[in-house]
Amino acid sequence: MKIENIPQYEDLNLVTTEIRERCKDLILDDDTLREIQRRFLDNIKRGLGKDTHEEAIIKCFVTYVQNLPSGEESGKFLALDLGGTNFRVLLIELSQNHFEMKSKIFAIPQHIMLGSGERLFDHIADCLYKFMKEENIVDEVLPLGFTFSFPLIQKSLTTGILKRWTKGFNCSNVVGHDVVQLLLDAIDRRGDIKISVMAILNDSTGTLMSCAWLNHNCRIGLIVGTGSNACYVEKQKNAELFDGEDLGSGNVLINTEWGAFGDDGALNFVRTCYDEEIDKNSVNPGKQLHEKMISGMYMGELARLVLEKLTKEGLLFGGKGSDILFTRGSFYTKYVSEIESDRPGTYSNCIEILEELGLKHATEQDYINVRFICECVSRRAAHLVSAAVAGLLNKMGEKKVTIGIDGSVYRYHPHFHNLMMEKIGHLTEPGIVYDLMLSEDGSGRGAALVAAVACRHPR
Ligand code: BGC
Image (cartoon, rainbow, N blue to C red; front, side, top):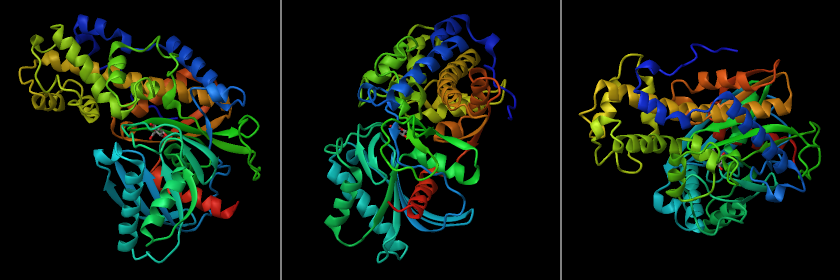
């Protein structure tokens, strides 16, 4: 287990006392994290239970994926990946522990993210057609894996009913419908291509599969990106809603949809006024409260809200803010990573960002304070994720587990990995050995792998 230089708060002693005082609520100590973990596991159990599932906040959806890849998977697959502001189409060729991939990214404009479901799926089918044409495969009928990274109630490997939209999407007439059918309908409306959908899956499931293909200890797939979620290997007997036939492993992957944790108030004891503000201004108020404390869609705005408040209280920038700083969404999540990437004692990224925000008058004391505020927000996210991951590790009780992880926050934040490695260690039972492995392109390769494993076990 590698934990290189556990990141402490830089310049802690130099941070203004009032700023430290005002940021206290953003710092969660280990006892608080243990309490969060206890509540989290209680929610997981309710999600898995037959009698408690209906009311449960963390849904623990059964994915119908039972077997992890063996490394022997082979063939040519299409994959679709919808889950953030972009949509990707991929063509993947798998052969023994080797793969080749071609892919194309298409933007999903805001008016489609908030428009009708029919328009969204027409757009997806259109992108798929364009890609197949470019790759000269319009006449082939390839097995396809569809990574659809929103909460889905699965009835089988190829049926997924949308429970709710997250991450800024809000298309009409999709919630309550089978998204595989909506895709097939859109393809039918065009009539110029054919596909064979082998599986629909979540990006956390894809991440687990993609990581397990290379590392046989992988049992958890994690996303800390625009949104946040985890998938893990559960025993079929504990997944009381699983109604499939055991294909031999006795296990089934569970898509926890942990982003919804706290929607019943379970996290109110640690939520701050900034979290309330974020929620109020979102397209889904009252929903995905855990995700809103963690993920990339909200992290920059959380930091901005702290900066705005403390500026108005006269504690930053001599009490003089700027129109940009006071504009919602102007402080990107990547700024948090960039500011924390400045070497100790230096502030070049911070200075550049503050200038962009119209805060040329910031002083060195402000740089120190701004970095501290970013650290408080990102560390809280890393610690909340760690409490939940450690909860899953404790629940699974396996001695050696690799966690496959993907997402922009994990990838680009300079300390997220080390923060998690350290904190998971504080919150797991003694004797559990774990590792965090960056999963390369879980949504794409994972979709091909789920499709490939499904081809091996036709229903
Ligand atoms: C969605 C999950 C997804 C996660 C990461 C959340 O908003 O509900 O299904 O796995 O984002 O993309």
